[in-house]
Length: 423
Image (cartoon, rainbow, N blue to C red; front, top):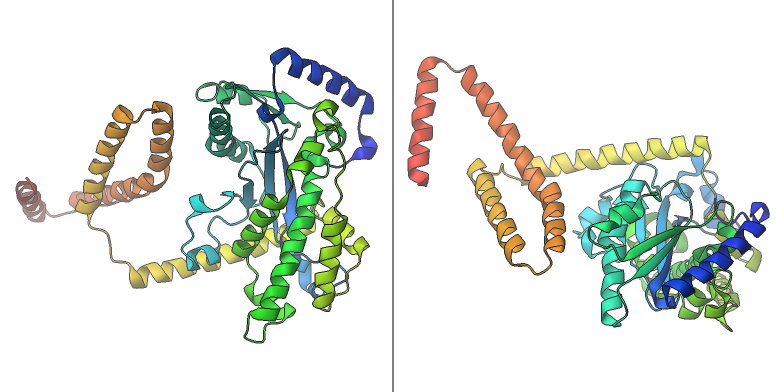
C-alpha cells in the first residue's frame, strides 16, 4: 500500500536508510547510478467532484465513465537526469481509437501493456524491466561514460519478483536490486515523496488546458460536456501523461531522495506545487467550472483509491462488452476488406524470416539484443502467420483423409505439379 504514513515503521525506515547510505558509499554508487520505480493508479477521465461533469457522471449506473482506470509505473535516477519511459497498463490491448488512428504501440511515449484489471503483474513488470528500463539505463551510463553498474530500489509489491537480479543476470548483470522493508514505503520510497503527486497535478493541469484549448479554438461549437463525452479518449490521455511526466522537474526528482540519502538532496528538499494548483483553478474558472484548492487535493488522493468489488465487477462487465463489440467490428471489417492470404505467400515469408534471423544472429554486434528482438518478433507477428499455416495444414490433412481415392490421387498429382512449377 502506498502513502500509508500512519502505519509506517519509522524505526525500520531509519535503520534501512543508514545501511543504505553505507552501501552506497562502500559500493561507490553515484546519484546517476541509483534508481527507483513505483506504480500508481490514474483515473485518467476524472475531474474534481465539485464540477458539473462529475455530478452528472454520478447519476450514471456504476459511475462507469468515472472508473476508467489505468496503472502507471514511473522510474528515474537520484540525480533526476534520466526519466525512464513509463509503463502503462490498460484494460484493453487494442482500444478502438488505436485502430482508428493506426497507432503503432511500440512508438507510443509509454510502454503499453494490458490485462483485464489494468494492474501490473510480474510478467508485465519483467517485460518492462528487460525491454525498457534496463536498455535505457545501460545506454545512459555509456553515454555519460560512467562505470557500468546500477542499483534499483523497489518496494515489496507482489508484482516485483524477488529473483529480479537472476532475471537480469543474462543480459544486464550490472543492475543490482534492493527492496525496501515492509511498511516503510511512505517514508522511504522516492517516487512516493511528492513525485507521483506532482505528476498527477501536472496531468490535471494539462487536462484542463486541453479542455480549454478545444473549447476556445476547436470549433464545432465545442463545449466541456461535448469534449468530455465525444472527444476525450485514452490516446489523448497518453499524450497528456507524456506532457506531465516531462514537466516533472529535476529538482522534484532529486528532492525525492531526502529520506534515503539526505546528502544527495541538500537544498532541493522542498517541492512546491502551489503554482500548478493555481493554474488549474484559473483555467477551471475560465471554463466556468467550480474548483477550489481542496478539490484538486481531493482529486489527487482519489487516484490512489482502489475500486470496490462491486465497482470492479461493473467495470469488468463493461470492458467485456466493449471487447465483444470491438471484436465484432473487427471481424466485420476483416470479412469485408481482407482477402485470404495465399498459403504459398505465408510459407515464403516464413522462409525469409528464418534467413533474416540467421543473418542478424551472425552479423549484429550485440548478439543478446539480436536474440531478444528476434524472439519478440517470432513470438508475436511471425507466430500469428505460423499458426495460420498450421491450421490450414491440419485442415488439408483432414480434407485428404475424407477424399475419395480418385480425388486423392488427383490432388497428389496437383501437389506434384505445383512443386515442379515452384522449383
